[in-house]
Image (cartoon, rainbow, N blue to C red):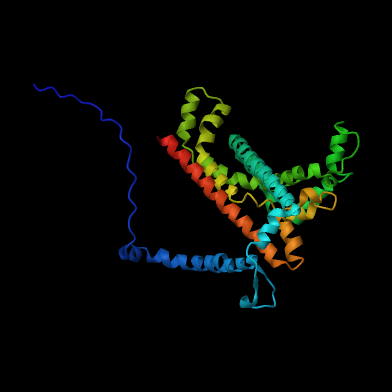
Length: 321
């Protein structure tokens, strides 16, 4: 009899599926979806693309009373002023510093809270804690900053607790010293948004296959090992996507909290690009300078978003190889 040898074929990388061409037949089959997207497309064009025409003000000495043809074109004059002005460099430092701190603390605290909430077995207690944690999200910043200012006053609850614990000898004026301002802003952001940010992570955790946890129980894994080896890898794609989206807003350190908590004593630490644009651009009628500052933020945000997306894609391709 003829011997038949059964072997295994060498692994060959899968070819990427070719993109289908858009044809009239496809358009006819999906015409309902196309019609449904028309209002959204019109909204985006009207409020996101048409205003881009206003960017021309950054290259002019814009005067509201003049028509477009009568404006004086100055090229990159206002951009040169931004990058050589000490005040703008200072607010750029403040914006980046507070934004990075908010980004790191926001991600870490939201992930940790989601992991801890996932370990609570009593549904009623879990829902109670979750509800309490995301209620501050619905408060306006004017209310939040009022609570923060009252808590950090010389006779506020924070100084009272620290003095009773003998951690400080006399009250600290938290909002009058620049070295504390970034920490106060970061703490305010975390308190207000941490519960709301955990909702997405809890939804991602709920989609993890329960069989993985059952198998880990058989292997004798404890709760911490499950969190590290199952839960965190399971929500990794969600973390990456949210991180990419957040990096795109790296210059969005905020406006309300810095404007409301800031004062003349901490102005060197509290001013952000948005406050700079309001103070030196719009308030003084220099709309060209304000527009230049807005363009700078947009260009940096788009660049960081593309870079983060490219980096995540490269790392994903390297792991597949």
